[in-house]
Length: 219
Image 1 (tube, one colour):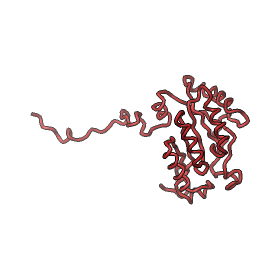
Image 2 (image 1 turned 135 degrees about the horizontal axis):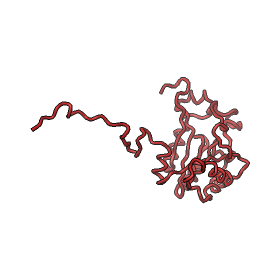
Image 3 (image 1 turned 180 degrees about the vertical axis):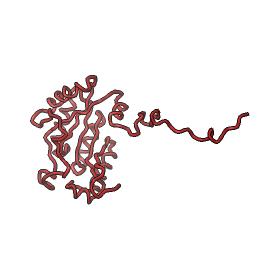
Image 4 (image 1 turned 90 degrees about the vertical axis):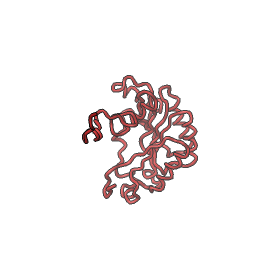
């Protein structure tokens, strides 16, 4: 009988190039595109839409000038113009992405620039329903601020999420109130916690945008 050597008893190192993580990918993080593939069984593309919203720290409700880091023109595709209807932006967005994703036929309307819940409920219904009525749209991704939702809006979005894929993306940026004040966010982290907790309570899919490495932050 052969005796096992101490070398045999050692755990073999994992080949990181072959390791598959619990989310089914070899990358050590669950990418958004991989998440969508698992959710829908195929690639789904987000289409940015500019519905003409603004923000409470731009229009004077709580301040002017917006956040210190914010420049919506930096990420808005050329077809995104609030003067165009939601339907026109979706049609042009599909053409815009075809050169890169020619096999994609399912899309999420991404209400992206500014705060896309910062209006009355009837305006939100009209805009969201127009997007959802497009035959290639299977859901919405709604970018907004945590201080731009309330129970009425969250109840409505929760109702929508029963029939469509709906993701609320909150601008969190930081969990430190001093940092939030420094970057002119105009809200506190407690407001962020409330918005996320109330969204999760209603089983709304919820995401967050966080800026790592802001001045004076270490962790």
